[in-house]
Image (tube, rainbow, N blue to C red; front, side, top):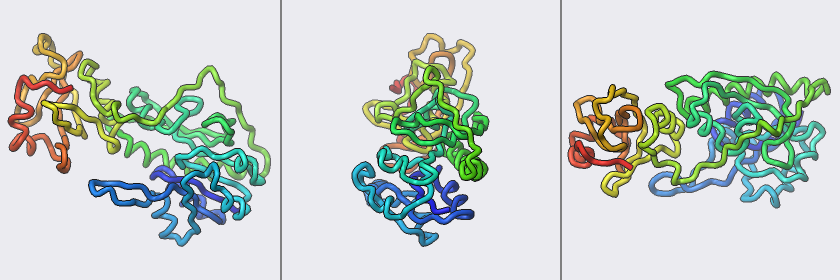
Length: 312
């Protein structure tokens, strides 16, 4: 079967790889190279890097809504979309014989939108999964073809969940396609009353709210790691917070302000929150690489994160 694949992020790579093993990928569509890193140099998407390694034909439209003719010219039997990052125009949705299928990183109708993995972890969900669906003009609103789920463990973050869901989505798609091809698949409409949204993350959401509980802050940090990474301000300086741990205080610091550094040891730096303490484990000062808290406290951290300082 001739397939046009549209994807950008790491989540999409194992799905493309699985399709390549069984079908003819006539075109790979991915986002244009974007500035990345400290030097803001153009960087290829993970999907582009994989496609190039396999000598696949590439197309990188700035706006697929208006620049879609190469997709039509490829004459696919099916279009598969996974974490592409742009809305697909209606002219493409019904063009192929087997329509347009999306592999989405949530258990729809929960978490429609561009940041389902982040939102699920930040919300403290215990389960997530993948949905294979026919695409509709409305975002992530098409009928469901199949679903599979996995647990979200306490040691998971967006990076680990993305890797797990990418593999799960690849297997689920290959299992589902035969039923699509032979016409036995039974699409199930989404229940609109159960819809929730996973909007793209905003910069201001990176900053931690230390008036929340230990668990909420713990989930926030891992829900923003490894990108875009949670943050906190101390004396006007921004620290990226890569890893934290929960430390119940049993009321010892109940009279301290939320966000206040209340304990500094060789092991960690503890910050007061609503129901206990959050221990900073790995941080990243502005303009520096990530480092463990012990290393940071041997230098600039002695002053910036001394007892009594306020994080916000």
